[in-house]
Image (cartoon, rainbow, N blue to C red):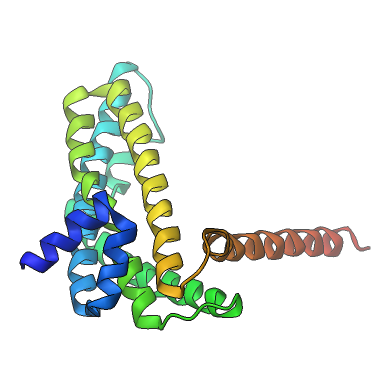
Length: 208
């Protein structure tokens, strides 16, 4: 437990050196899975609270209906939101780590998949602050709470991306430039494919 707490605090405050030490100590995938579970639970709790904050925002505009009379019934229940957060969190962890590992290998990376998986799991740690952000949004209330949730949520997303880059760099003994390229390349490929599909669809529709 002491080692887990040390790795958690190290990831948040001195990630590069902590990632190197975790690789040397061969931190297990099970330990990373515990971190991912904690991050997913906190993220799910934050989503539930933030959802409430956005709903209260509409109260500042009397007579305004956000979608329709059944809007509230369409929102996920707390149990469903938490379950989806955990399930999709684990799926995304494995899938994204797998994709980035393959890209890193193509770019000359030397790390093993388990190393990528462990460090990418710990890179999700900033999501533990989703729950406090949700509480701040609730207590702030209305439009203010909604803007706080969006602003702080954006900061957390950037923090996670930075940790992702560091995780890739340390796992694959990369330069910072190659680590960034590993993270960016899959998004570029997806955008190019999406653009090609749009062009092909437009072409097919325009055909007589």
